[in-house]
Amino acid sequence: MMRILIIDSQPDDRYTLRAVLESMGHEVDEVASPPAALAQLERQACDVILVNLRLFSESGVDLLQQLRVMQPRVEVVVTTADPGIEKAVELIRQGAFDYLTNPFGPAQIQVVMERLARFQQLRDRIANLEERMSDEVSEGLINVGGRVTLEQLEAAHIRKVMSQCTSLEEAARVLGIDPSTLYRKRKRHRL
Image (tube, helix red, strand yellow):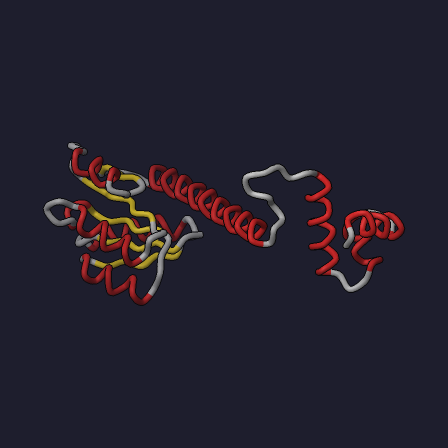
């Protein structure tokens, strides 16, 4: 489930989009103008913004940049009734995630939302891995620029497990080895 903000000056279009997105299990807010959208974003963060192309300024980039400044991780999907897609392509080059050309139906919206969800999962996974790697580098678990031996990795793993356990027996259970083996490994690694 994602929190979605719809920006469209047409009440009927907002209502239809809201109904479709809510039926997919998303939380939806809607506003009629870019200033109202900026005010809404100050009150409530969102994951995705669906914005009608006709609401963009002449270049189309100003609103997109303002949205990105307020919420750098938000993804923007542009909707347009104009089959000439030059402006939509320019917005994607400037950072919009995708665009939908009117008329579009629930199936097309669902495809875009599924792609967005997968993209956000991957982005979050990468951020998590980067954070873990940063932690391991700062803890000295990974020797950047050199080789790391299996012995070093094993010692780091044992050290980490032991720091989280209250006894040698508990640490051995977590590691899946018997306490006497853990004792020998501790002695060998000087832990």
